[in-house]
Image 1 (cartoon, rainbow, N blue to C red):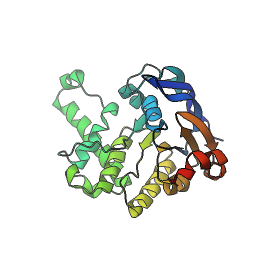
Image 2: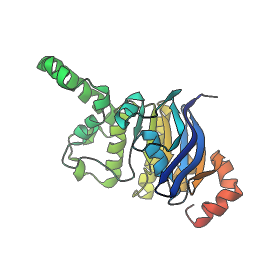
Image 3: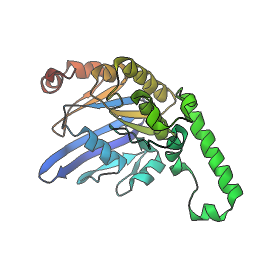
Image 4: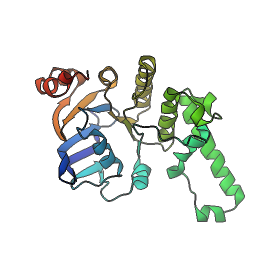
Length: 256
């Protein structure tokens, strides 16, 4: 069995008097797809924000590759190897697809004042390497032909692919996908499932928040279920589907 890449222990988070994350503990093994599901308001996106560093936990710990991420800002967590997408796409609409993907590469580049002092030859080589790396990511995702297109001109499903390409450009070991099938039609959702499988096959661990149960059960190795900020079940897709508490609290609400 592969080792745990991510270990979350005793996590708590409040918003005012609302206990949004309540004693959540779980691990995510290296090289798998793990889904986090639950009704609206269960705390799924808040949990993502805690892992990615855009929120700080009130208590508890998050270990990535055996090292704590506590107190680190999001860009340093990204440099460690955790990248994410968002439920609502956050592309720069007037920039090209390639330029959007290059934005995601910045945590792996040597920019800033000292790079500028090295002269245009050095900075030019760095930019060429960045462009080549980002074009390679687009090629792997079957989107190389979109490189010169303006991001706003793409259909929504392709924008989702570009956002994932931008996240992959940072060379993550753990990819957080926040509702990647949101707004997609059934054919696009099926393509998204295949894409997630290919990302896992590249050795990248995927943690996914998703409401589409056909996608979750088709692509996930493990599933974690939240309700009102607490864990209520964890296991294989088959085990979770058969859990009476999950059926009562979540699947019985018509989301499946």
